[in-house]
Length: 431
Image 1 (cartoon, one colour):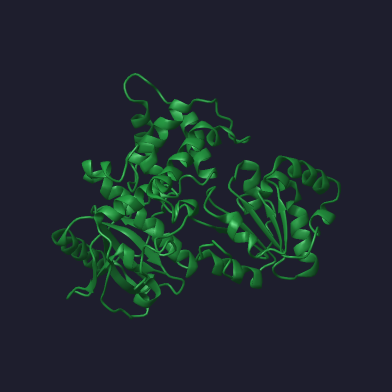
Image 2 (tube, one colour):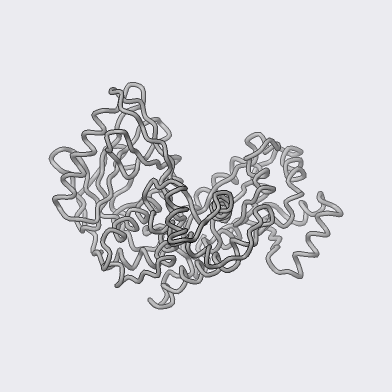
């Protein structure tokens, strides 16, 4: 499909496959990531619950006759912002079960609170026995925005295929990508317009969205919300504890109640503002203990930049923060690519203080270790040696084989080191 003005998304392939293999698809993810625009391309009938006037009419119809509501027109039927009629979930399941046909419904939403978590399989409520599937749509990767040339494919690396290549992007470009983010509305616009989108998103979160969840009631306190977002941004790409974040938020004589703090974090999770990276727990040959704390990430690195008030020029004044946000940018793109090939992304940390910034676990059991470096050749060499040491301690007979080891950089050349480790610029990667 080539709708005028539409930027092709890797998630298009996910939707196409699910509509061929499942009765219904629930698409979740941060607001403004393009869920509605993309889903609209695959629907024969659209029920838009965003406009207030039509929303109230559709809600009444769904209450009076849920069966008629769910057969409102030709299928697939898209119910956009469907959380407003979440009470129809059991009817959706019934309609899917009744015919057994694939591709009946697409449900989209940007909020998952306690009540709606039932609908996504996070409680005891029946979720559709595999006939209804939930998929997360993320903001755009650099390959989707056209900034990565896609000369190095994760699947090709997994299958032993690689050719040296080059990216024209430099460190200034990556500073801009961190601050711009992958918001569809920011792509192809003037620089000032593009940079404004993440800032606007951040402002909506701290002034309205975080206080709008019925199941996580929070007293409106914008300053506290801003402090939390800044603290989270300062600890992005780090396995910081809740205590660390809370103490960082408080500062001075101020306090941040533990339970209230937990509510704020849950609100950000349920709004898909933050998306922690889980720890990888492989079988090791040694008795080294694995650290299982999740690593802090925003769903888009530009949210962190906006929370800190960082510009593409100002980010160079704090190289440490630049490095952490660059790592988050890479992890974001790896997650987008992994989603399309049935893989998962994790973080590796052990009691020897060894880390791999990202681990890709493929669906066949193989895995790849990845380090992310903003520095120069010496940093890359040390990162490669670290990956080799970690890989050597992993029991491949129990955990699966290593598909590849890779250092992702801001440099321009993609090559294979003599020790077998790949060095690849972020703007050469794709799925």
